[in-house]
Length: 159
Image 1 (cartoon, rainbow, N blue to C red):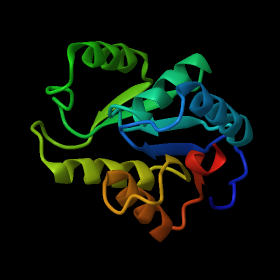
Image 2 (cartoon, one colour):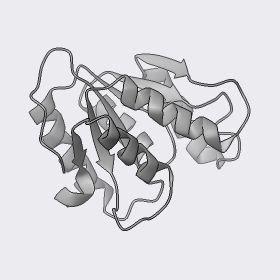
Image 3 (cartoon, rainbow, N blue to C red):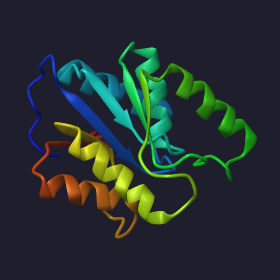
Image 4 (tube, rainbow, N blue to C red):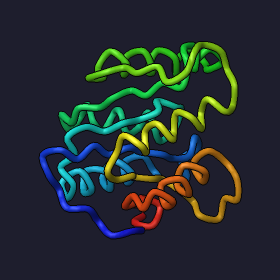
């Protein structure tokens, strides 16, 4: 975990995290609330993927924190089960803004472009990152954030 940035009126924060949650959701929600109270983000940018990204969007709704849905491409949800699609659409309706990062159609590189976009727009990163994982989009996003010297608060380390 990196130094905590001071809160301000203009503190956009982005999130990155794993698809599969290894900790109970209620604990992750509690840690997010602790972080939001410390940072007081002006907006939270989430990629809206299954797992941590959508849990963050839910948490923002519960805590009246505006969030921006940074969707990697139109149709991200195409292969998801119906119940996850419904949750996704419901969350998109509650977003302050929906930003389509790349043109429609799946390509793995578009997920990385989405992550870079979110980090570039943010002053801090909140992660749900198991550092023992040697590959994946979350690892790439954390490494990119470190390269830009963004403060990273890793919830994984707090649970």
